[in-house]
Length: 134
Image 1: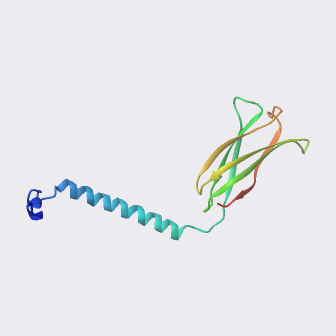
Image 2: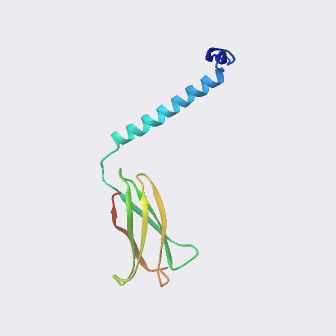
């Protein structure tokens, strides 16, 4: 009958240095990630969502207006409703809408609005109508 101490005598006594180094690196990475997430969760601002839209005519399609939605605020916006309007003689001639599903804080999201008419040379505006806070 084998004794347990005899089985353990067959194992090497020294753990390789590489194994200790990798273990230390793993602990440091885990602790750093945990610390960052905890600090971000505690100190994340409670400021408002601040949305900006930059728009331009599409170079390839005269009926398309491309836009970039930028969330400069401290909170995430979800289901952002974007509305585009073509104006003729100061009156709204046509509208188009798009929804940006998710705009995290400090991000920029791209989208396009499609119209039935050629919008080159016409006045148009693009605005964010509303959003949800996830």
